[in-house]
Amino acid sequence: MAAAAQVIRRAQLYVPGSSMRFLEKSRGLTVDSIAYDLEDSVTPSKKPEGRQNILAVLNKDRVPNVREQAVRINPVSSGLALDDLTEVLKGTNLDCLVVPKVDAASDLHFVTDVLKQKLPERHTPGSPGWNPVKIVALVESARSVMDLSAICAASPFLSGITFAAEDFALDLSITRTPGLNEFTYARSAIVTAARAFNLPSTLDLVSTTFRGEEGRRFLQEESENGKRFGFNGKQCIHPDQVSTVQEVFSPSQQETEWAVRVVIADKKADAQGRGAWTLDGKMIDVPVVGKAKAIVAKAELCGMDVKGLQDKFKDEEPQ
Image 1 (cartoon, rainbow, N blue to C red):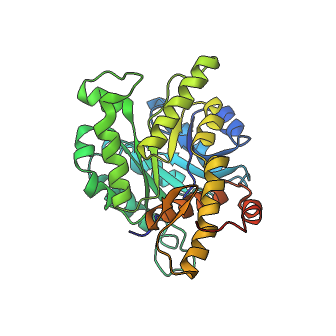
Image 2 (tube, rainbow, N blue to C red):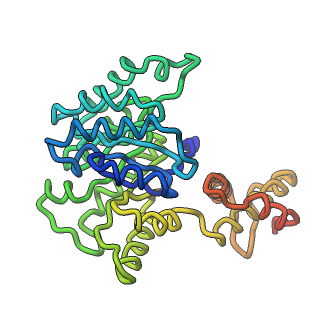
């Protein structure tokens, strides 16, 4: 299977759209993705004000330290999504829509149709203005987990799947524990479906414990758990979470050095007609090389000095 297109969404930070102060403050952060929120953090009476606040921010000049500006709209089933979309799609610098409570493919069909209608230039293949607004779908219920295949195939603009654990726990009447064992099936289903449908982004559950030394340790461990599970990013609800999360979901220096060595040695092995070889006493074959290339690509997107490592290990030889 071809590699999914690289999207760096190691952390996606939710910022309430009803607070202009928080919206302005978020522009000073260094974060892969900010999701300006119109859903859970905004009361019904504040929705119109939130839309206008977010639109104002989207029409400001971009800041270089925020890679992606997203908006979490209200669920399609709420009846508020069209009003959200009508306003925020006027934003000059909107990159992504986060769609909550996606229970069926029809939710994404609706959003896709609105994108095509409201912004035809950005969403018509071959158009000079082709630059689609990406979609990230939140999986929050038993129904959505059971319908993942249809959801993943529902829109050509779908860029990622996010696991919303709190609503999922509510739907199944289960209690969240620190080990997250109760979410094993749902989390595995999400990362597997996203890979099967070549979606580049999978965002793990929100960590509600993060303050103080103990909280930071817990956040790191939970992020590492998500990375081992196959997620490549995590939702954040406070700016203090971002640096820890982005560090965990970046390739480590050791990982990157190993990957660079593998890629360099593999080119030489390929020239020698060797399909399998060893490095540091371990066998290297096609799947391992594929993993190494993905790590190098992600390291480059994360701003790591890959060129310097390539120079350092240029004499690496297959064993």
